[in-house]
Length: 227
Image 1 (cartoon, one colour):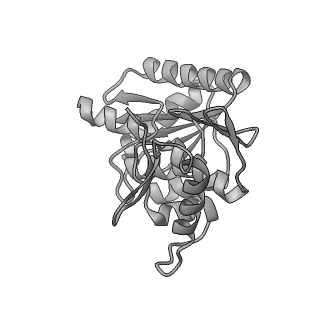
Image 2: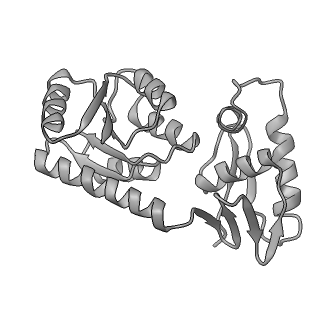
């Protein structure tokens, strides 16, 4: 099992690497968020162990990057931040589990094993379906339905809707949408995001009273669940 450890504290990283290798894991260490982002984009990992307080890109920003890229690798946050709000924030932004420092090493190994078992089981058994009220997106089959109506989308429309639904109720900036859907750097002169949001609205919201896709002026777009 190959794990990526993102930890800038040398004493802690040496302790964790030594213990995990002795427990039978293969470990690659990233000492900052920039190196971690590069390693995550280059290859697949069985699990990522992530510190929050990093010297450049903090752990929350790295979590956002991973999930906006639709990378489903399980992420275990191991952090000295132990307040409930810190844990909730990390989980909201895509962490699968949270372990506060200091910790017992046996608990770290147990959580790694539990996360990887759960991830493997979910991938084998469950179909990947995203839902937002009466809107369903079937990731593997590239099917979108609202109510009982199937909605035909182009590939880019599907990718944009998937991004919004994976982050429902969260505002996504145009720059992040461009990077995640089109893989291009932010260009303030392009209106491709606005055009495709318009396409989606015509297909997703036009025939329904409840409008799911919303604009937050000056910040970006989101898909919001209706109460």
